[in-house]
Length: 239
Image (cartoon, rainbow, N blue to C red):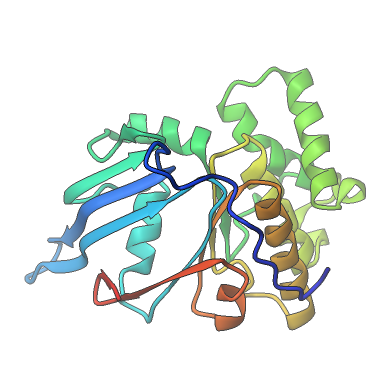
């Protein structure tokens, strides 16, 4: 499976009666922190349907990180609207965004962001703790997630005892724990060798084939080729 680029068929019809999972309308983001305002995003219009596999590419300063933060409910636009599952969340406050983020978005980061004092299993369990899932159910879900990423036998190890590929698999398992609508991966193979990169991308391919909506932010053409749709950002606009 490693290295195989798959483009599974879309899971949902895109007919007029089907609501996009994600819909952005005229979305713009301006930062006013310095002497000159910076327009990071300019009038972004975008629809992503359930089961999509999208790569977001662009040079440094193109706005892709800002777009990722808004899609992941880590930030809000200055103007425009963001609809997630038909709900307009653009003006949610920080507490409302946190609830949506924990329920609907799973994150996978280049640096893994595993807590070093916790075991792999405990790292996977964290989103379930925040969601107040009962302990018995938490243990079941953790076991399911570790099995999904092929690391049942590594659950008791701490991050410093894991390889880079194993750490990223644990990060993916953690991102999936709450069964989110979106798996959002930011440069998920940036710290990995070529063989391990292929294994991680094959895992993301498989998750998408099973119906998961996957959005990958990357500068790597090899990674982007796994997606079925690529968005190129330049100076805050989709080009």
